[in-house]
Length: 219
Image 1 (cartoon, helix red, strand yellow):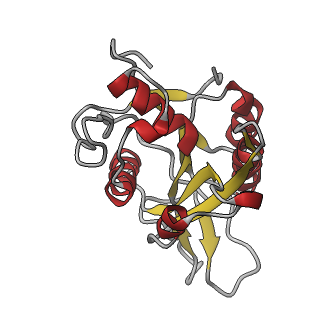
Image 2 (image 1 turned 30 degrees about the vertical axis):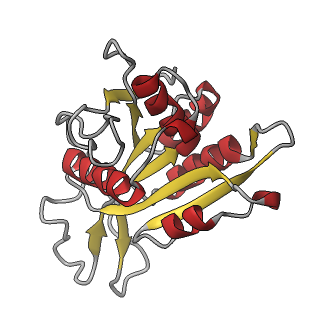
């Protein structure tokens, strides 16, 4: 697994309306992230150095305001396969019915409540269901949800997803380097993302791994 990553289980109760007979949802409160954020506004070329005061303003630097966000990165293939396994014993995602708006709303509620930060966006990583990695009708509807960014790979001829992991890894590394969010909630079970997680952490981003529990309640 990823080294130095806070790991939490998705709780049984909060998303029961999102999956029929499927459970995953809010996590317990954890240590709050350090508020560092990004700077905007003002007439000066750059903000001052050093830790920010509690009110997020600097005396003598009028116009500078600090913004901090959380973000959610969802590996949809992992989430649905793991949840289907939890419910039905099979990883086939077509074996479950999903209320996507409710599911995403619960993930947002979870991230904002745990981090005490507003959401920047949900990055929704999946394979395009149509040829060439194009979205189907359901994926297009998800992409129209507020603060949701559809990030699609493609399906190979054998049915394997291609390009999804690399999109997640690149987004973690680039967004970590640019500090677009202070806390990233990663819904994934892919060890190949370890290096990307470590890159984001090296730039001061807190990464929290969200896992669907197995039938014994383990991640």
